[in-house]
Length: 73
Picture 1 (cartoon, rainbow, N blue to C red):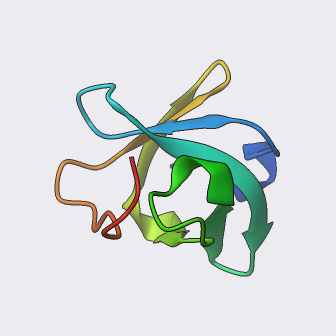
Picture 2: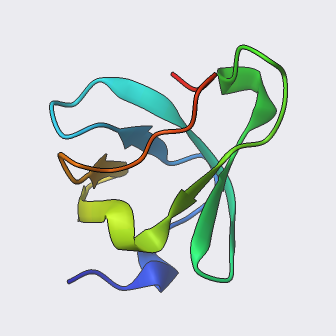
């Protein structure tokens, strides 16, 4: 398990295969808020912290079954 304090602004978020999903804007409670610039609708989207598989260097890898919001990636 990871520590949510390790998640920082501007970290890359990828799916389980390493494909870019978004960039961290901030952590709000138990959710990761993604930057608007990575979304097709120019809106913030959120990922659940429980969907994070691991953190390596400056990259967050999501679990294979993570729910990735539409308009992200």
